[in-house]
Structures are given as C-alpha cells and as structure tokens.
Length: 423
Image 1 (cartoon, rainbow, N blue to C red):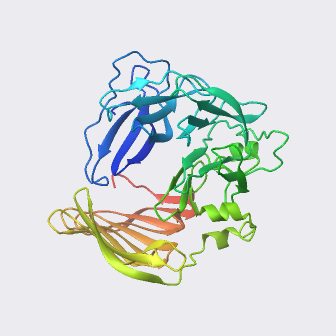
Image 2: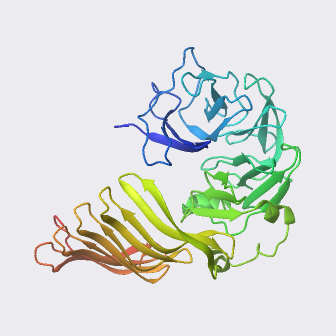
Image 3: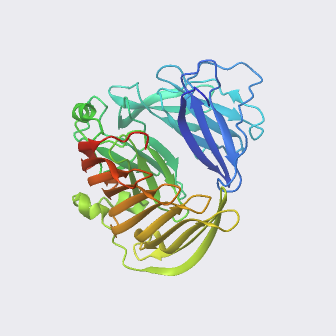
C-alpha cells in the first residue's frame, strides 16, 4: 500500500488455496488485516480484499500473527494482536464474505493458536505478559468469546520474539520458542538459555522438551548481550506432507531454516546437539534417487527443474533448472548438484540480453558479474556465504574502464576508491 507500513505477513495454505494476509500497523483507521488469495500456487493472485465486518469490533492492532486455520465446523479463524498484551481471533463462517470479532482477548500479545481435540481453542504466549515469569496459556470453550488464562512451563517472551505452535499430522502439538526474554530473564525453574522445541501428546498438558542446536545470537550486538542466549526471534513453523517440521528463525544474521522430525525431539539423544556449526550445515547427501523433471507455472512463464529424494531423506534439485518466459524464451538458467548450485548461473532480461551471471567455484563461493543492457560489464564482485569478499568493481558504461571500487571483508566495506557518478 502506498505510504503505509505493510506489516506482519501471514501465509496460509487453506487446502490448496493460498492466503497472503498482512496488516497496516501504523494506519490507525485501517482494517485488522487485508489479504490476497491464489488458487495456482502463487502464479496469479486476487485483488486485495478487505474484511467486511457487519457489526462493530473491539480493539485491535493491525498485526496478524502466524495462526490461520479452519475449525472442525469449517469456519476460518485468523489471529492478530489486540490492544496491549492481548491477542484476538477473527472469524468467518462464510469463507471470507463476512467477518466478526470472536469477542474475547487472550493472555498475551503474539498469541499462537490451534484447535484442541475436543473443539476448544488453545493459545500460547506470546509476549509482553507473564504469570510468575512464565508464558500464559489461554483456553476458550466458547469459540473465543472468553478465555481462561493459566501458566505454561515456558519462559515469558518480549521484544523481537514470537513462539510457534502447530498441530502435526500425528495429532501431537509442536511448540518452539526462546528459553529467555529479550532482556535475558529466565524464571527460576529454567536453568538454561537458548532455543527449545517441544512435543505434546495431550494438547499441551505435558511436554517433551529439547534444546535446539545450531542456533545463533541476535543480529544486533546490544540485543545479543542483553539476551545472553540464542534466539529464533519471530518464528514460524510448518510441517510438510513427508512429516518434516520446518522452523524459520528471524533476528539473526543470517536468518535460519531448521528441519527435523518428531522422532528427533522425542528421542532425546544428544548425538547431534554438540556438533559444530560446520557439521550442522554440511550437505550430507551423496546421491539422489528417482530423478524426474518437473514443470511449474509461475508469474510470466514456467519453471522446469529436475530433482528427487536424496539418501538423507530430503527432496533436492539435481540437474538443470530453467525459467522460461511466456513465449518460451529463457529468463534464467542454472544447474544443481545434490541441491547446490554449480557451474554458471545466468539471468536474462525480457529483451533477451544477459542481465547477470554467477560462476560458482564452490557452492558457497561465486563471482558475480552484472551487465549493462548493451552487453558491457557493469559490476564484478566475489561472494562467500552471501557476504561480499574482496574487491568489487563498477565499470563505466561507455568506456568500460573502472570508475569505482570497494574492498569487503565478510560483507563489511573496508575501503573504497573512485566515484560511482551516474553509473
């Protein structure tokens, strides 16, 4: 939206229909949320839709959380922040034609929700509130009109923190969050710091909790010092059809994507917990079986790629990947080996001219060259783990001579020379 703080995105797969929901947190006269939908995996999207409320609603902050789901009656429920340390569920009984405020407010901001096995609604968290230093638990037996608040075994949360809660295909609940607040506080019964993941067989009555390895400190040094432990920041969790749980972490440099399954949490083994970061990030796949070609429709064309299931259980790209435009023209061309880019990756303008290319010396190290529309080299730089490394050069469009350069170390500019001018 022009001149508006688009905020707090939520992506939800509603049995094949993709909802993209977001808020305008600083626009006080706006809606609690607005959304677009796609029925073709994001190739095309509906116009922006604003929720129609036939009746007045209570106080809210236009920040959707991560929870959107259908209850057992087929009603749609979307969570957002309320006023202060509270959250609210918005409900539609007619597939989004009309919406209403369920009425109640939970015991925490950024509350994450699921429907319980008996039809009650369950919310955890999420931040800016506590019961004896612990995160609140909110339960409603009347569809969100009222909530009963109690204590969880988890630490309360603060700024730059949001837990994750989802129902797994097994019927268990999965939950994740930080072991300390943004200020480094932990209640007396929590003796560790960092990140935890948990599984419950009884709708949150008891939990099997395990510390997550390979986590990182907050990206800002002061925040990292205050917390005194690693974080997953504003987190999001989802489970894919093959059973793998995916956890996305933010507020670290870089943001991280974790993959694990229920058995890893339930086993309690420490075999991997003490592994080095290098070992955790190493690609252990040695071969890919059942390789086949796939074609997907995307905005403005199709993507053709090859892949299969590797011996570590993951689906990996393996072979060529090509993005074709509406008339079959090549827009992007790359080659993957065991899920990692190799060789030369090229990207073309719609006119057919080369826009840029990356030449991979290793999966983590590449030289990146960009081109002017007339074919001359515009820039050349080297990148390691997506951080600039060494000399990066800008060339004049007319003469091809070097006009500006910088030297980088691990993404930090150490020196510069020349003047970029109008280039």
